[in-house]
Amino acid sequence: MDQDILKEVMSALEQVSDLIYQGNIEQANRLLVVTLQALEQTIMQIEDENGQADMKEKLLEALEAMENEDHILLADILRYEVYESLKKYII
Image 1 (cartoon, rainbow, N blue to C red):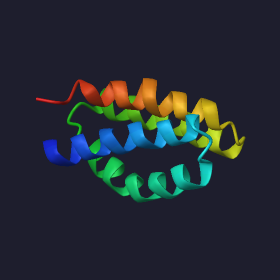
Image 2 (tube, one colour):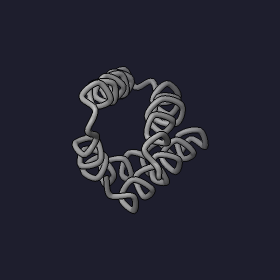
Image 3 (cartoon, one colour):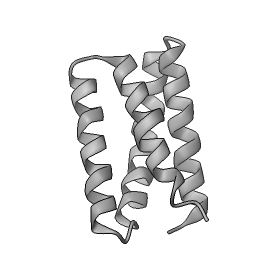
């Protein structure tokens, strides 16, 4: 797994969740769109199939939060589920 991309994705996820908590939803959405491709690339590099499935499930939860315009839930999922799951892949 590309450690530089992983760290960039994790930093971006922190920034997105911080922006949401601060009420900067539009800016958070723009950053999230830019981050999604790198996040997808990172998930595809996870060798453990269960790890990949777990991340995809978390992203589906994030998508549902976005569809419901539940910004705080989205920020929580990104920060406390996706980010924390990615931490275990840092070498």
